[in-house]
Image (cartoon, rainbow, N blue to C red; front, side):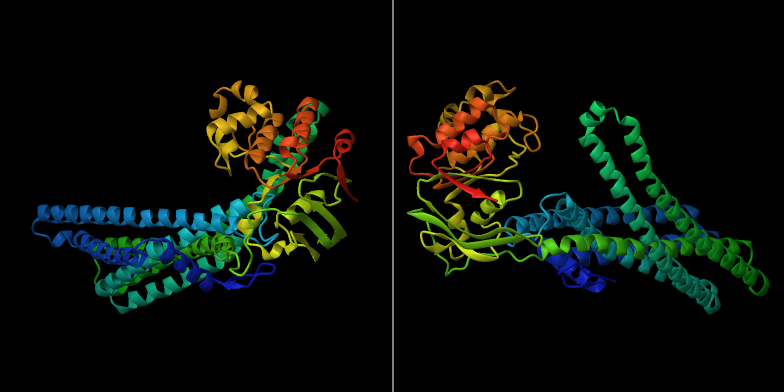
Length: 549
């Protein structure tokens, strides 16, 4: 088994497992000891199960049935205690593994400095980490709890069959094992294909549900409920067809398996009755033993499918866990001040095979207040991403006080900049914690800044004032207040350079005018501002402009 992603190396099934075990041993304290205890537990439980089975099969030979009952009770309680203890220990290690692997993946994303390496605009990365780490955890569980345990119990069943009925019956059971494994392994490929079709269809169905919910008001306004219901039914049909197909395949595999073992049990019983010395008790015990063996083979065979699914899911997380964090070059410069100018020299950037910015030459002096304007798609937001070093130019470069920004330590460089992105999403936390994010300002300084931006009273009107939780992305407060909180946070950082991307898009005219007046006020005369805005009235207020087209 292997998977090849665009621009990434191919990883085989054994490679995925090796990486999984490497992560597990790195992230879990005393991982080898935990796995060793699991092995010991499986052996002890298997031995106890055998003792219970032997007693049950030989009850007729026991002179003291009470002694047999006591032994069975003691062995089963022992099995339960060992199983419970080791399960708690192992599940705790799995929980620790999932937690630390998730943290590692998130840190690799946060510290990543390779533009475009991860998809940040959708839920793909979140899903890949969540589902992928879960898949890696399941791989460990399947290998060390299911596969090893099941193989051990199959070995015990075969040993009992050999001891009680001889080589002929052992050979038949080994043949059943081989055929059963082939049936389920072949069936696994068909099931995985069906599952992929089902997942693809479900993804399309879920996307339509999300689209309907997102456009609820539009649907009501245009009275297109009937049309959207029809469209949703069209998305459900492929999912239903894929679901029925998968259930059909599962039923066929199960039927073939059951037919194989039922026929084999019949043949073994006929042989035992015709050529053996078996009586009714021996025949009953044989049926019970083969039934246990049947269940063991079926469960073991199904593990392969579970393991493949876990591997495919685990592969999604590997690219995040394997990502190398880019650290600052020790030879790069430290800067703690913006002295003179920020300059673009022959800078070009290509996005999706289209030239967005072509040979830009522009100098920004310390203290400049510049409005950046131009048509949609002209590269205004991309310009800010280039300044922040979230992207790299294809040609030319950006220089600060004569130094290429690529030669400055990242942490040192970004400490000079405050940034408001075009989409001002807040953290799901209190207003106060969102304001304090990324700065060390005191409570009184935060209040003072909010008063200056005229949002203090607006915040106090919230249910819990500054302690009001704003919800996911800040959706529990108005869009205008959300943008004002973002502006206040940027001002509180007290940087040398401010990059504001459409900071007034959600503000009323008076609030927008107030913000621009503050930016242009003498208080910030020594600060450098670049503001993206296409409002002609605002553009006129700025002493300097940069037009991108």
